[in-house]
Amino acid sequence: MLNLDTFGLDPKSRQARIKRVAIAVASAWKAEAQEAGLKSTLNTYKKGVVIREIGENHAVIALAGELPNLLDQGIEPHDMRDYLLNTVRVGSSKIRKVKKGPRKDEKYRYISFRKTVSEIKKMGGASAYNTAKQLTSSFSGTEGKLIYGSRMPQGQSAHYISKGGVVSVSEALEGMVKLTGISTAQGALKKADNTYRTFRTVSYRRPEAWQHSGFQALNLAHKVNSNIDIIVQEAGL
Image (tube, rainbow, N blue to C red; front, side, top):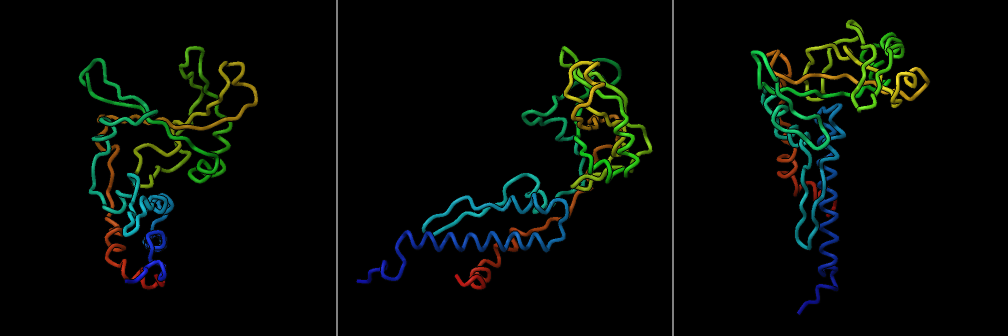
């Protein structure tokens, strides 16, 4: 009778080897993503490759997160409003309905996008940032309602292209406001830490809005799964 402990094949050792295999496969998966030509979504995809479970004889390596899975599986061109006006995440803006007129009961919602100083400069250059700094601050009133100051005029930037390839109907910085944490008009005139935001309406009013062009599937999960034996061999495991 052989004592497998002598060969390092006890349950603890087997699990340690499986862990090394899982790490090698996850690393190879991330390397494939690195070579796939991803740009702004690369880090998001790589963070989605996770080792979920390690056992004596198995490991579960998965792709977590909505965007990583969309990238891997691909997506056909579609109207984003079909889900933006039907699903609301915790902490996001609520879905509203038009109260009167020919569009009564039609759904709509507002979505805000934070703009950092570097993004403003990237989208509109130094001149856009100079304009942004001169905006009259918006602030929260006593009842929590936002009291708007001045807004970013047109002609300060090109149209925005999202990570998923969606081209905005409006210019990237059009209508942007400068927000301050001060809750009074007098306080808004004082020096304070400012943030910048644009607000966009999601509705069916403009047919050309919120159209996603889709993207081709990466299929990296299938590729890695098909090459596990080679990955393990090259890793010396």
